[in-house]
Length: 399
Image (tube, rainbow, N blue to C red; front, top):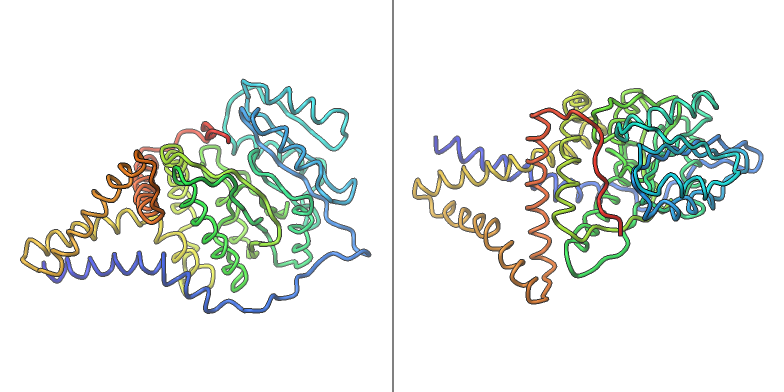
């Protein structure tokens, strides 16, 4: 049994080290240092038609700014249309949309009377967009969230990549705004920055960016597949369906969009646990894409996502295996056990005490953030096992 627990400890430790350290370093080492030329539509080309899909629910705090962001986009006139669906909003969202869109002929607004969740709304919007402009390689869908704001050239920068017929999905570069020492915003921002580079390099190396951020990404319309109504992470679902059809997915670091970063760890925990449940939904459906694991797609999927989603279980295995080995009298694993218990117990406690005194330690907060997000993953797994009945959820507080 000693050998069994020792092997289990090192496998778990190695898996976490690989997904959080070795894999990012490997991508950095393999990535070309020079930018490759990007295919783009010239003056003589007709730019693709773009249908913007926006599902909203009780977004009165941000929807006016969002619409300004979309309407100010620098894209050829007549080639872009906006399909907006309200998921039975009960605040002033629908009135603001009607007022802001005015007499614009490129805005198609659908105030759905029944609360069904974002996947169902996106499916309906896509159906209407494809009815107006049939699905083809020359018709693109921009899927975006109400709290994500675009630069005027973002849509054009995303669309340029579809000159390359291999490209099926392009993600924008998400930038967090509103950082503060309080809460977890700095840790969340560092995480998003690291994720952006990972996604960019995956696309750069293999055309295998594993899942867009979801706030603003572009998909070829002929690749859209109706999203199961109970799925919680629709962007990942659509990306994996695109991979199944043999296309590439990339991230464009020049196509900027902005989202206010979360400060409250409780709010972020709720959001992460919901996303985690959706991740396990997607894993059950797309696990086969990890094979062969030596392909760019399989290796990226395993290294970037699957091992992270299994992170809570690796952490538990590390804890229990080192506990067993410490009880066997192994001094090394006794020290390892003490370090783990300190990380789980003392670090959050010390960080909370310092917070009460107005002191903010970035590394302490980051460790607490890492632990909390792995607990959120575990909570999401429990939710997935119990069964997800609906894709409807309450949006986080807008700042």
